[in-house]
Length: 280
Image 1 (tube, rainbow, N blue to C red):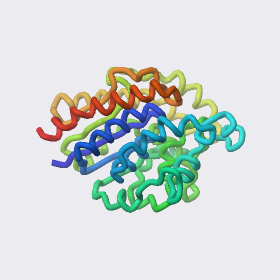
Image 2: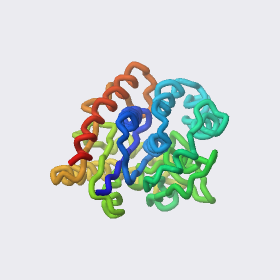
Image 3: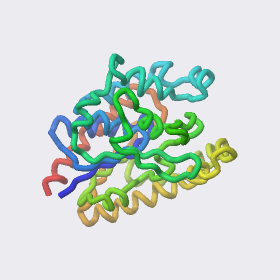
């Protein structure tokens, strides 16, 4: 059976999924297929490289640094989050916490990273062929939250966060041949997203990128629909939803270390359900 894993991201709430993947590394749990959205793309990269604890450091330690995200970065680079610092300065060879690119690429998993074409609002599914040693622009594109970040240019195309185009890519996973899927959410499963914040953010980008703004306004609906579909698959035993019972006070850009630690620990504990799921 082909087993897939989807990490939907969620900013610094992604530390929950980091805990899930660290458990998977400890238990030698392997997947045949993976999709990452936003921070979920980075989580998958470190998991594929077998680098336990790597993502934890980015959420828990590095996020407190001014160079990582701050108002000064917004004024200097027009992006509150400095994705170049995260995915180049820290992650390249010689950086403080480099991604083990050779080991990552040796992992046979079929892997996709979702970003959203800002011109069309449609998802783009980048593959392993689109990522290279010390060239992690695809990860930056997948994580480019509208307004918080500028769109990331790749081959002349501007990209925003993958959650705009396909926030819960369950359909793609099964269409690509998965028999069962582990879906990692970073909010409680019963959370119903609202569009109030997205509506406000969409106003800032609708003049230049009207299609991306439209998708941003629809993101909550698409997310809720995706979770409902996953729940239908879960009733059939084809999907395992791994989600926290609460977020420990962590929001997209929360830096509180006690809250981050609790959410990471929760992810590590909750991941135990995966062992039973893949044995079925």
